[in-house]
Image 1 (cartoon, rainbow, N blue to C red):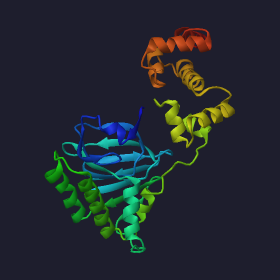
Image 2 (image 1 turned 135 degrees about the horizontal axis):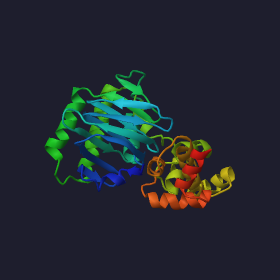
Image 3 (image 1 turned 180 degrees about the horizontal axis):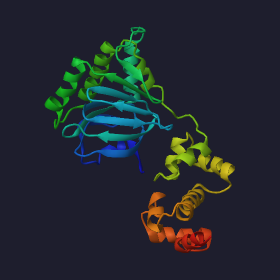
Length: 295
């Protein structure tokens, strides 16, 4: 599983088209013709997603799931890590993604300060750092207008800011508590996580050391230092040994083939897997499997 940091990772994708974009703030249109599973994403900029067709299933660190259906908004705080499944509707999956610069949210909140109350119409907190809201007719018409009026147009920075502020205003009409806006601006889940728990759960993901540091709330140097304190080795060495040890159990205890065991722990190249296995156990996976069968 490869981690994508958004919005940066989205701009080069064929299935994502900009409606209006400028730096940290942007409005993007996303479509998928087939289902897409286990997409790991780190939210670098506060994000609101409107699901127009299909549904998105979002899971957090602890595998808590939130299903976002058609005509719903999902609010994702800055600093949130999620794993998502995108499920097509009758024809496609379609969503509009709206990224908000922190300053823009702060600007809106400063203007709206003191106007909120405890009433919330349709707002629900789900997995950590996410909130969903069923979009009323005003919001649905606003989303429809973005593609009809602005898609393909060369909008100005001022126009982008106005359209994003307009959505915040429309949502505030429906959700008078302003709670989701405050959550979006609070910085999300950058708190430190226990390295041992996190690595045991995510060692098989295709993450770089920088990703592990980011997701556990540390700088790279601090992550490496804390990792060595926990495991007395480097992250790369531990991950290799962990994968090979799991594969060894699959080969010797569950009768997996060498190819299947390699694939199960994330090795696409079986020859490379055999090499690192022999370095760890002193024999090839095939011989280890034979020895286990003879016991």
